[in-house]
Length: 118
Image (cartoon, rainbow, N blue to C red; front, top):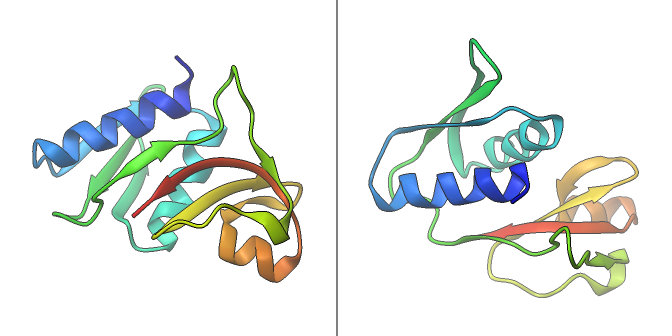
């Protein structure tokens, strides 16, 4: 299992268990995805940990569903005109960085659709 899938599963499990904080493995992609979740208001805070981990503070009952779309065995790429339709937000890895599908549409860039949240 890749680190992004581990992070999303940890967030989902901590949310269901009503935990306030969750620690996940640190990686550049995990940090950028967590930063996008913070900027969009899905999580309360992101802090780097002492060792190789990342501490994420969750908002109570904020995330209803979070799932991985593009997987290591099956990558999903999309142009900015053809992003899948979802209730919430898609997080996309583009040549201009990791961002939401709304921002990618504004900048007219496509990329790999990493995950979705609502």
